[in-house]
Length: 184
Image (tube, rainbow, N blue to C red; front, side):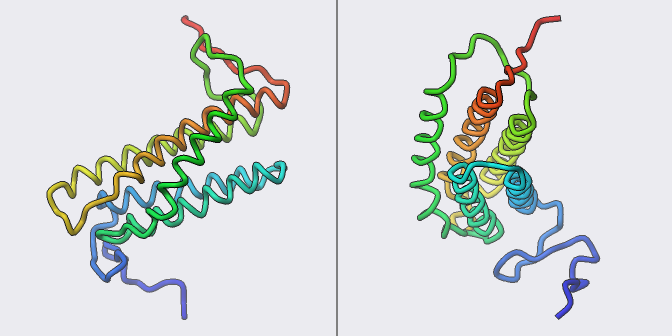
């Protein structure tokens, strides 16, 4: 079976359940951004990482894949069994990371070491995924059959917070200072 189907050559694509929508449909933007975020997590995982950190990133990838599948399915909610406990796991990771860091006294610019810089990219893509998610929520509001589970938005919000904290932690571990923002 070839990888190309030619079914999208006119600018539309299929959702799970055989419904066709334009390739720039808000639902496609939402799960496409989740896919992009997952790809960037994979890029970070190609770096030399300690085993536990890599395992945490793998769990995030698995969760993002399930979220993407739900967003690609009108009324999809299969990821909730993973997403709801994952929110608590992310909060625990944030708390553990923040306990290692000095309190912020200024805004921090993206940068520092390579791992921290990649984590800042992840943070910004996670924020965009969250924005696309909320656009989709508003688009389907009032249509109970197309509802999008709220815990997905909560998960994406916590995930971006975690990536920010992990970026600061990566700089600390590498002995690289965070890049403070300074007023021109």
